[in-house]
Image 1 (cartoon, protein in one colour):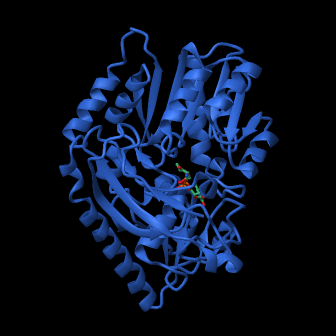
Image 2 (image 1 turned 30 degrees about the vertical axis):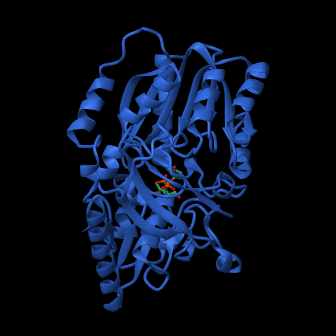
Image 3 (image 1 turned 45 degrees about the vertical axis):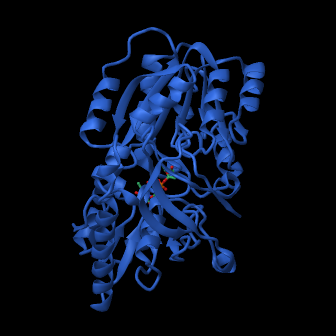
Length: 409
Ligand code: DWN
């Protein structure tokens, strides 16, 4: 178990990097644990940097991908119903925009086949997933899935066996990879000449404007905006030709890239660049006050949660997302503060949250128990969850929403 501290920007290799956020030392957020393994839990620095040359926001402390995306990875995308809906409509977009019958679609980091399952009827699909347990879940849905991390070598083998891909997707993956050059080269190897690479990642503008500091964790090495991505693809003779904002994971961007074609770009590219310029994302100043904003959220949450506990109220948490573990550890919460956290992911139930060691239990407990306050860690599904838990709220439970500002509903 280890990490390496880099000194160069991941995209432009520049060394003019400004640290603007420090969250302390954290364990990998998807490494749910149990009593037998707590003592050998590792923590690593969680600091965020801005590159003055290409403006990429990124982590420089890199935990090995084998430690993060291991054989018992706890994140199954399909555990969140709203996310299944999102990928269903994403698949419709791909079919409408690019795909013909029998085209090959390859999804890098395909998780449990949440996107590909909606394309099997139209196209040939192939998943690539390094976590064996998650890949198995995809195969159970009939999605052919290759174990392992995507490389140029793997791309060549895929081309030899299946031919070239019309569409390659990378959803909440393209921001997770340290050697991005390897991935872009591998995508180029895999794509047909008129093929399209579509990546969807959490969007820096949403992170900063809505103070979504908890989306910072070691799996997320990059926090993309359009400008550095254009710089990256340009280096490989590719072009960003369309960008769409999508309402998942607190706000994301879906970026479309292709081999240079001479064809016009969608006006969305220039519009998003302008938006970022106006929001100050292309300079260090906008980031200079972020630590203070994040520290203030922590202060509010800690005094709220511990104040309720002092009054003898029961406080629990809802959803055990990866980001929830950044928030819990940054606030220093433990089971003394939050009695348990409920989660719909079977593989998380019965384990303890990494670092804070709070028991993860089935949501069924909420049919018999009514906590006084419930910290909504899965705040990105706020509307869906508040609606789903109407009966619980009528019984008197109040939800504490931490992001974008602390509120009780
Ligand atoms: O990059 C990544 C992001 C994009 O997705 C991955 N590394 C891991 C994952 O991050 P996350 O765990 O923050 O994702 P979610 O989808 O926000 O996680 C939601 C969690 O909440 C899941 O564990 C499921 C759970 N949940 C629940 O208990 N009740 C979700 C819903 C909708 C619910 O009603």
